[in-house]
Length: 197
Image (cartoon, rainbow, N blue to C red; front, side, top):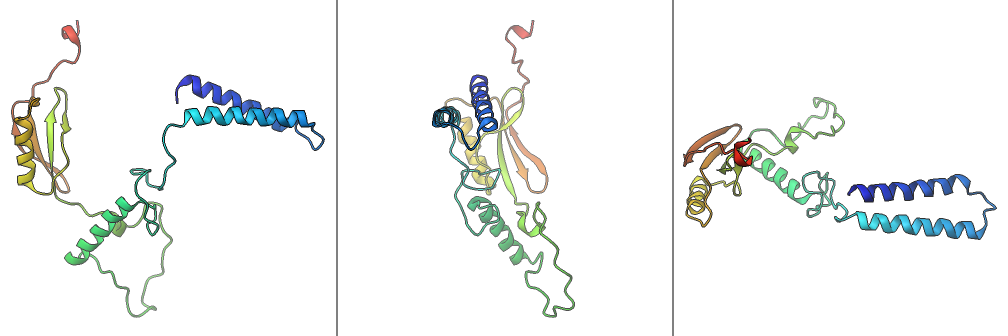
């Protein structure tokens, strides 16, 4: 929303607020038609201002992503990631899924936290991140890969491409980041023309 749209929308809403203050049970039809015209004007401004579609999920990361009705945040992508994490942790035996057989010995249930529980968060996964040196910083240049050889093949194809970067590196991500290999030499490039004179 630019400044002109914001100003016009604010003005239209203030006019509607003033109508609300003066309306009574005996308001004339002419006054109601004036309110209707102002409402239409405010809706038209709002229609011009809104450019994106309404969010389909409650997920901040994927507001317009596919919907999964059974998910807490309605996001199919995040729910798939959580299910995958739960499945892999069940296979690895990191936490038990079953409840104790004796309900007397079980601890009382706590209320749900808005941040979720540990089982809902995805477990750290091993990935290899291809990065390119932009002249100022290392920047992700491709999709993180689960296979190291695939990531190295991707970077070698990038280096042979029509517009190769100054330098590339492969970063191993697990619970921490570790630079595995660097191709080329990252040189700091001044972004100001004429050397910032």
